[in-house]
Amino acid sequence: MARSVRDYDESDVRVRPGRRGSRPRTKERPAHREAVPGRVVTVDRGRYTTLVDEDGLPRVVLAMRARELGRKGIVVGDRVALVGDVSGADGSLARIVRVEPRSTVLRRTADDTDPVERVVVANADQLVVVSALADPEPRPRLIDRCLVAAYDADMDPLLVLTKADLTDPAPFLAQYAPLSVPHVVVARRDGGVDGLDAVREALAGRTSVLVGHSGVGKSTLVNALVPAAGRATGVVNDVTGRGRHTSTSAVALALPDDVGWVVDTPGIRSFGLAHVDPERIVHHFPDLEPGTADCPRGCSHDEEECALDAWVEGGNAGAAGPSRLESLRRLLRTRTSAAGD
Ligand SMILES: Nc1nc2c(ncn2[C@@H]2O[C@H](COP(=O)(O)OP(=O)(O)OP(=O)(O)O)[C@@H](O)[C@H]2O)c(=O)[nH]1
Ligand SMILES: [Zn+2]
Image: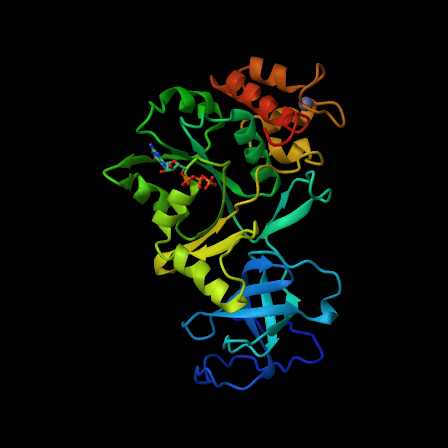
């Protein structure tokens, strides 16, 4: 994580540009008021568990929000500046004085228990939709909704299809082929996970949010990818003193060898799509997008006057044009279909 001190502007933050790792890392380090950068790994009832890596020895630092932050939300994945006791020692509590600008935000849909649509993860660049090929059956409408959420958030989607040992993945893949979404197929073999290397490769160098409904094998995957996942959660719980981690908050886990992050999202089943602008989705179909030039103003791209039909019929999007347009419209329609299914 790059240390960024250039623009700390809080009055109680003393800026010392260019110094890095000059203090010895000891548990006894006194409280000080100089901001250090950290990344939020989980949020639980007003306590933020952050990972601070000043000198290549990452440590878990528990923090609360500073008053001067006002009502600004802090979510998993946020890069923050911490002051106060940033030692990470037992019982210590730092303060978050700044939230760095976010590169992306992923919002969860409003639901029965919480009517407000909320940002759940910041700064992720890939949305990994985990789906079983069987047991439970894939839910294409839910997958489509996740793809739309990814496109809207400017995140790259990745499909991870589990349980290929139970059924042939070909029919499912055929259904998704026109979207050309990257995918990885995994299966259980000899007590291990077959295809794990391909998943690792797809996650390398990225911050990936994993979503998937219950039973698809997401935990199995996370545990295989991050052998220390259980332990990491344990550390978090030691620090927060809250016992077993039962919250439904997302948890960011560092992949071994520092090759990226995965954010596990236990409680997130769907996304709010009502306000998604069709143009943001079409933008991910570069073969079709130029054809919208002749559309009427405010075209939904799913109406009679839409210019895309003529564009595709004219062969402008190649042989795959018709199926691509059909898939695009299928995604556009998820915005109005029921959430969560
Ligand atoms: N046959 C087969 N079973 C699998 C595979 N991956 C996971 N499972 C099984 O599927 C069940 C669900 O796996 P989990 O990893 O707990 O699924 P999850 O998505 O985390 O589900 P929740 O914990 O309910 O959120 C378990 O019994 C796993 O052993 C696979 O590739 N093939
Ligand atoms: Zn149109």
